[in-house]
Image 1 (cartoon, rainbow, N blue to C red):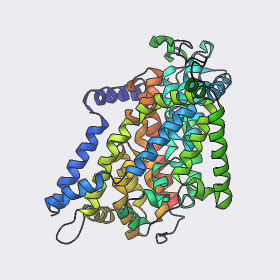
Image 2 (image 1 turned 120 degrees about the vertical axis):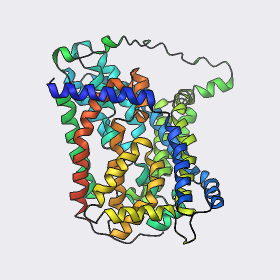
Image 3 (image 1 turned 90 degrees about the horizontal axis):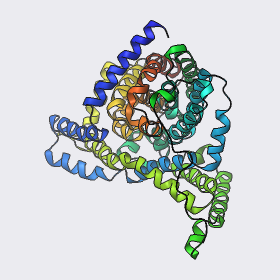
Image 4 (image 1 turned 180 degrees about the horizontal axis):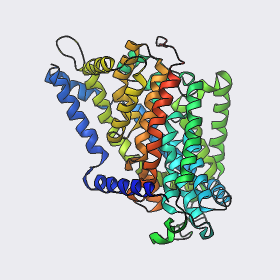
Length: 472
């Protein structure tokens, strides 16, 4: 490893140690966000009563979207831990012939799976790292492999079909009314399926894989799993009794009910995709979750296996359940609490960004801001609810393509995931590591990604023109 890389990793570890000691749980940042926005609304002259009313009215405004996000996480986990996927992981683990090749494989899987389901990517790649680590002959650096497992979350997830912001904007039923009035419905064809967006995605995949390869330690710098004193109980999970003792036991352990439900689901999906444009159909978050739910039921075979997987997945949604109501309140305070001039906080923020940005610099200014805020509010969908009112207002004022404005947010918002422990938690829990073990490698990715993403957002955005919002 070269000298500069050692310095960078030492710096990253110090930052990680500091953040682990001083940074509170992300829930605290959500609480602080409500208080800060409330104070800011009061400072522009909004009455206290209006701020309080906006807080209460907005608290439950995101219930449909909250449930959708919880289901996305659960079904992604359920699919990842199914037996067929486990067999697939074992087969993939046999592919590489070297430690660095194994790290490249993990990075590649992470980048591509995250385009489909970000929750599934973090779980599936962690399980792949374990399978590869058990191949002692590879001499794979366990830290670098773990870091590669999270690359998709920092590079491509928000540019794929599980993008919270793109899903939200494509679904009128999920959009808070103030945001709908600003942006209208923006279909996938104007966000993630834009040719410019797909070009950016392809570039990020190539660069991320290259960095994962060249930053992987060699020789004596390699730290394998054996040096972490990590052990797993090999296949010692308690299995449910398969011998039926009562009718209920037989139904739980029989695939018959699962098969019937999946057949009904397939018939519904066939009808859904034949009566409308498939791209429009999949842009519905309900349809998207339905597909993965049916897939999870099918892959687990019996209701008991499926329920066991769901039970393991549920704890991962606690942050979404408790924080999204606060994000809804923040959005309402910013847009509904107005002063005597009938102006909201979001209006003043948008005015500020319009004053320091031009149509040419909008992508860079908003990208930097979104990336910084993303470290403190680690939630793609929840943060978009907060940012969207003034981002879309500024886009209107500067005549920036509305769909590309969503992609500016998406690409920049993903960047802090490379160093934010929040989204690393599922992966780190499975691999039994700490954030400081991997942060040195993810910081290396971030240093390259930040200028590259801002440049791509700027240069590709120049090829798009503004169009008024579409209301359906």
